[in-house]
Image 1 (cartoon, helix red, strand yellow):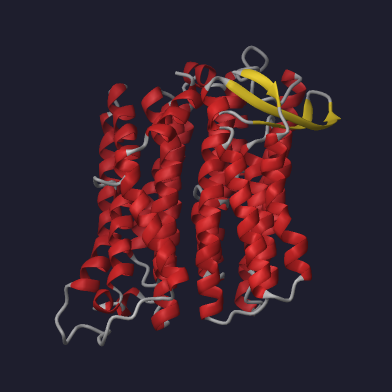
Image 2 (spheres, helix red, strand yellow):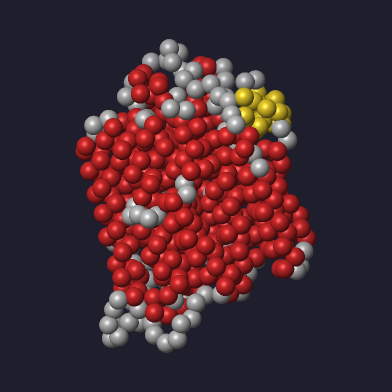
Amino acid sequence: METVASLTPVLAVAASLIAVPTGLSSRSGNLREAWTFLAAGLTFCLVASMVPSVLAGQAPTFTIADVIPGAPIQFRVDALGLLFALVSSFLWIVTEAYAIGYMRGLNEHAQTRFFTFFSLSIFSAVGVAFSANLFTMYLFYELLSFATYPLVTHKQDAESRTSGRKYLTNIVGTSIGLVLPAMIVVASLTGTLDFAHPGGLAGKVGNVWIWILLAMFVFGFAKAALMPFHSWLPAAMVAPTPVSALLHAVAVVKVGAFCILRIVTGVFGVDLLRSIGAGQLLIAAAAVTMILASCIALTQDGLKRRLAYSTVAQLAYIVFGAGLLNAWGLTGGIFHIVAHAFGKITLFFCAGAIYVTTHETKISRMAGIGRRMPLTMLAFFIASLSIIGIPPTAGFLSKWYLLNGCLSDGRWVLACLLVVSSMLNAAYFLPIAYKAFFCTDEEALHSGPVREAPLFCLIPLCLTAVISVALFFYPDIFLELAHRAIGM
């Protein structure tokens, strides 16, 4: 790609900060939320404005400061970063609308603090997306960890504080203990941390050390929630549902998976990893996580905890695609960022809408709820189909690419593993939707007239469900960005 100096990347990253000073100083909820909407809309527009440039082969670039030789604090917009930023910034607008309905519907405390740190989290996520090198990405990765901590501990009770400590210990401990030393080694061996020069380790160090460095990065970016560094994710479910949506679909976990994709394509390089068979490490970690997390999800009666373990399993698909190290697999892994984002955020929106309306959190207590909340549960069903990978939903496309990635290399065992994993997805999602609509009057625990959640909750979940279907028919922009990202 042709590097082009541009102020737009730094403006896109900084736009989310518009909401912070106004949110902290204003006592008016309407004014605070208006400024947050303005920041979200401006961020998305700035991100979207760079699509034509990137598709034309340009890489808008802006350097903030030369802090370390070979690793300045720098933004550069390429296809992979733009895809992630498009999804994150658009879903921020949707989640902002949903959060208003949810937080006001439950009369939650400290809403100003909530929306302020929400904005800081998106600032960090877009910063990760547009990072030109590993040093810049690491800075924004860590900033995201601390920006989301007040959201995880929002309730300020003993359980949320315990979960918050577990959250920080896992994701900050692994990044400092694994990613930071690996980054120092890479810099010392290659003289650069820039993503535009992958494969610099070739001939500089033995294959065993490349495997070790890859493992340090993969497990060090623990926001990807690969087992055994996954326990922080279910624990973080004590947070309000909009935070869960942020964690699972918009920012945190996707940042972890994105960083692994960036390491594979921008640091080691696909050719180097293929030459030494290092993709097996990624596939093994992903396969274990996909199956075990899905089995655990089957045992969960709490709706948000089942969704949490589902997320652990679904993130592994992205890493799995990266491990295949071929065009089909990498495209499927990258597109799964998009498909899972819209599907999983819909599921969490539905969980929150159910709680706002009925205060139910247990799956065993939701028989017949589809009769009372038909639109919510229809959206839940559509999003479930996307996560399972059934057409016509976006999830089918990402899993189709992953399946072809296995078959193109003759890996029939891995293809069967994908099918089994999808069957487990169906086993823990479809019974929820079935019992919500199809149960006897005696079994139904919810009856009476139709009563949906407030419109600020209902409209976002319907919108994201519709988009999950629309992406099946119109995936072109994201597939094009995915193809350009892998350059294969």
